[in-house]
Structures are given as structure tokens and as C-alpha cells.
Amino acid sequence: MKLYSTNNKENQVGLKEAVLKSLAVDKGLYMPMVIPSLSNGFLKNLNQYSLPEIAFEVCSNLFDDEIAPSDLMQIVTKAINFPAPVVPITNNISTLELFHGPSLAFKDFGARFMAQLMSYFTRNENNELTILVATSGDTGGAVAAGFYDTPGINVIILYPSGKVSEIQEKQLTTLGKNISACEIDGNFDDCQRIVKTAFLDEDLNKKYNLSSANSINIARLIPQSFYYFEAFKQRQSNNPLSFCIPSGNFGNLTAGLLAKKMGLPVQKFIAATNINNVIPEYLNTGVYTPVVSKQTIANAMDVGSPSNFTRMQQLYPNVEEMKNHIVGYWYNDEDIKRKMKNVFDETSYIMDPHGAIGYLASEDYLQSNKDHEVIFFETAHPCKFKDDVENAIESSISIPTAIKEILNKQKLSTRLDSSFDSFKAHLLG
Image 1 (cartoon, rainbow, N blue to C red):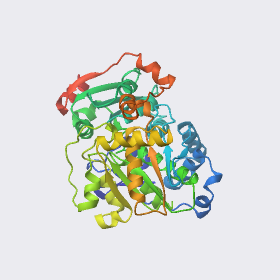
Image 2 (cartoon, rainbow, N blue to C red):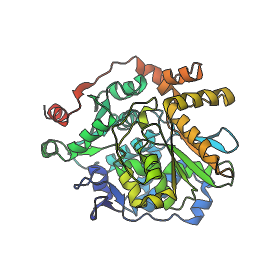
Image 3 (cartoon, rainbow, N blue to C red):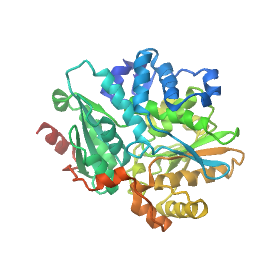
């Protein structure tokens, strides 16, 4: 498999280098040179395949024999060992529950797959790998759980102080061993900027063998395409199917675009955001204007400069072409709270704030596409946003036992300001 940098198509590497280095030397993100079409037989008979078997088929086509079939099956079987059920809510709106993994968030798919893939690529090497990851909420917990106690790999997680929920913070700061955390006095964009700068810093690269577990890494993106096929398999009807994706850094949606390029017959992708609405505004105006992110109750989507926009542009180079495949909507905190309450009262289904944004956008989209079916993503268990959810629905929610246990653990993190120099000094010190 060959991949190219989004900044220079001539800058090409193999899968191993793309996964272990994360970011190209020219600061570009890696994209597959070729996105193969899956066979019609596979696509028409998805109901005959388990989720790990779907993952194997997708990877087999993308990786082009770079990993032996037996090793690849072992990687996907170890990584994707939990379900992704589609739950109907109305006759044309369903949700794909992506929170049945160990950290109770959709990031488990990418983090666990990446951990297995990196472990495979470094199995015969003595040089320790250091993973840097910025998180606006769920990525940190998923990466911590996915890489915990993985031989030869250390993980440093950067998260914005006071801008993640208590459960999210405990998930990424309580494991110890090869997992450490830096609490940054800033926002997610500051954390992401520090990580990107670190990859290009000569001093840090002399001391550390650096890689990333953010969705800038292609190994995070590819496994997120698996559950689009799984959701299509479970759809309610044969009506045109659109997916609604609550979006922050837009890796999840970009993975869906890859699935469509591979042949999955998706009618439309609905990009649903909170007030950090850079992509919906781009789709509306044709002008891409990154901004400083604003804090909301849907904190995993508090991103003002989505990294994966550059990948979206590789697939659809201009706004008119992108609009043929993607439509955007955005909502504020009051909209989110109101929809959580409304859906709970009418159906007893409990959504987290991100899922509520997905539901809102699904409804708005169906206003002009009444014959369509929409599956929106429920990206995290509602308990991860317990206070906001309970306040919105005016009812208590249960907390899984595994989460109750970590709430009693001691938080272990290093507090830093938002400058790269402080982070660099911490690592070199």
C-alpha cells in the first residue's frame, strides 16, 4: 500500500512508515494513493459477514497484501471485539451505538486497531515508540485503554484543562504504567498545535521516536470506516440511506467518505456540529475560515480548525463537488438540551450531547428528503456527560461498573501552559 502527503503527492511512503510517523515531513496528512472498490458480492452480502470479517475485507483491499492474511485477521479480531448495534428510534431515524467498547466511545475502534497495528509493525524492533495525542474528550480515554501496557509503546496525552468531563479526565489520567497525561491551560486546538509542532521539532525527535494516535494518523481513520459497512448491514429499509455524523475533527466523516469511495452506496453524509461550525459554514459559503474553538456541552466537537478537512479536500477538491456528497448543520447548547429532553420524553432513549446534535441534523435533513433513512452516530455513552444529560432530561442515568471504579482512582497529570516551549521542556526534562 502506498500513501501520499496531502501537501505533496510526490511524497509517498508505505503503510508502516505512515502509521509509525503519523505526519509527513512536509506537515501533510497521509492518504491512500489508490482507494480500491470492494467487490459487488461483498457489498450485496454484508449480512453474511461479522464486524471483524468486514474489517478484514476492507483492510485486505486497502493494504494490498502488506500484512499476511493470518496476521491481519488476528489484528482485527483483537481490536474489534465488541458490537456496534443500530437502534431504531423512529421509522426512518436510527442510531448507530458506537460506545460498547472499553472506553465507552467510538474512538475505541480507531485506538484499539492502531495499537494492534503499531504493535505488529514494531514487534521486532528495540526502539521504543512514543505516542503523542491531543484530546477534546473521548480520544484520550480510548487511546489510554487501547495502548495500556503495550510493550515498547509509551503514550503522552494532552488535554485542555477544565474542558473535559470528570469521567473523561479520569479515563485518561488514572492508568499509569506507559500512559501519562499533560493538562494544558488552553483549548483543544492548543493541544493539537503542540502535538503537530512536536513532530517537527529536531530536539524532541532526537530523543524520542514519535508518533500520533490522533485522527491525523491514517491508522485511526481506516478502522472508522468499518462501522459504516456494519451500519448499512443493519439498516431498517431499502430506502436511500444517509449517515449523520456529529463532527469535530472530521476524522469520523472522512472515514465514511473512504467507505463510499470503496463502493458503499451512501446517499449523503450529514455533517452535524455544535457552534464550532467551520465546515457547515464552508459548505454554505465556499470559504474555509478556521477559528478559535468555543466551549460547549458537546466538548468532543469543540474544534475550530479540523485537521481532516485537508483529507476531505483530497477526495472532493472544491466546495461544489463536496456539497454533492455532504450537507452541514449546526446547533447550540440550548438546542442540544431541548432535543435530549424531547427524545427521552417521547421514546425513553437517552442520548449524549453529541448524539443529540446528530438527531437534530437527521430531522432537519429529512424535512427535504422524506423518502430517506438516516442513521446518526451515538458516539459516546451518556454517562460520560452525566451532569449535562441528567440536567437536560430531568432524570438520573446509570453508570456502568467499570466507570464507577475509575472515579475513585487518583488523577495523575502534569499541568502546563499552552506554549510548545513548556511542553518541550517537560519532555526534555
